Length: 57
Image (tube, rainbow, N blue to C red; front, side, top):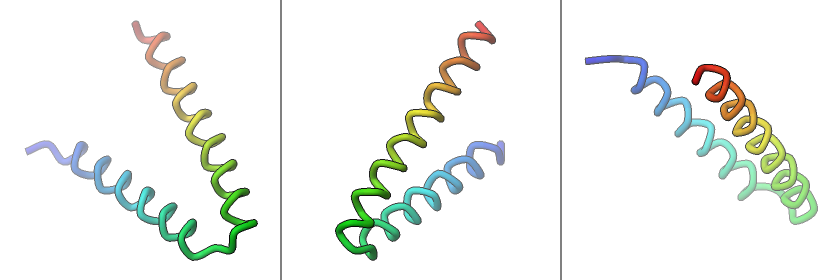
């Protein structure tokens, strides 16, 4: 059994859980800023992954 996919899935689950917890426990004004920041982070990560994938192919 390959351990890398298990570790990646666990890390993604922990990250998603932390984000959901932070959003659910914050006041409304903080939620808006958190959502904007999280969206920017996900966009940056997806752009980086796209660039890396296009460099490899």
